[in-house]
Image 1 (cartoon, rainbow, N blue to C red):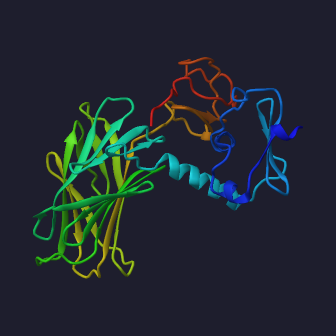
Image 2 (cartoon, rainbow, N blue to C red):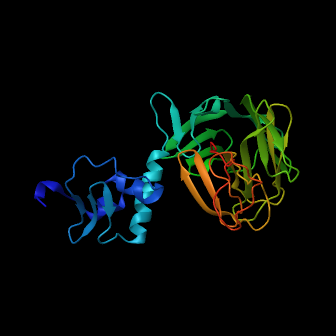
Image 3 (cartoon, one colour):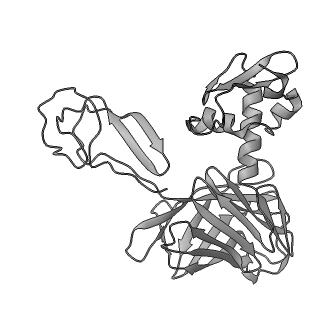
Length: 325
């Protein structure tokens, strides 16, 4: 192999995730590199002391792997970069996993999914113990985090990552008015309407057909001592209200739910012993779920799932189609 075919990287560059993204994509997403090789010649990626990886004829072989912590650092840098908030005239962030675009402005956050079937907006209208109007001071971004700064020591923040869009509040000091309950009234824009679960901690946003399009859940609230505070959601029309019992709290207080698109996959034939989910393969927005105990002898897509003439043949049910998440 000639020097012109060899590229040398430093350990610092490797740990920062600034080299050969196609190797990283291959390692974590299972993407084939067969179509990525531009020549049949071998191209090596080497550290000063040893070869880390080699690409030959579109295939990757690790000769001397980086440490687990190195790969974790590379992956973290890669994910942080592709979830970062961009500023081409406005604050916006794409989420590859959720397949949506979030735009942050003085009117709140607006989420537009790639499929275009709905749009969703959320804006803080009033907050506090006596529900004073929210007075926005400014918006700051850093990496994949966006912070709305309000008067009276309130911050509203969003973190765009693999889980979805984490949305929270930090109340740095008690509001000037009296009372034990903190409330945050959020106006909802777009086609979706909220439905609060019986536990008061989870919210589903429904589309015009009544199907859940977004989940707003994992509500957690704690004070400066790490003590969990009682909290719940309530809804009325196109408004969602967070309520927090702050009677014995020490400030600052943090409120932290996560907003995600809903994805749900189950077998259409739910007989016991099929071990549905024993294996899973994902390509883009298509999912195939294995069931090693499946007895169906049907083949192809939308086969006869009642044809149980092949005990323990294994496989997947033809009605398990691709889902968009």
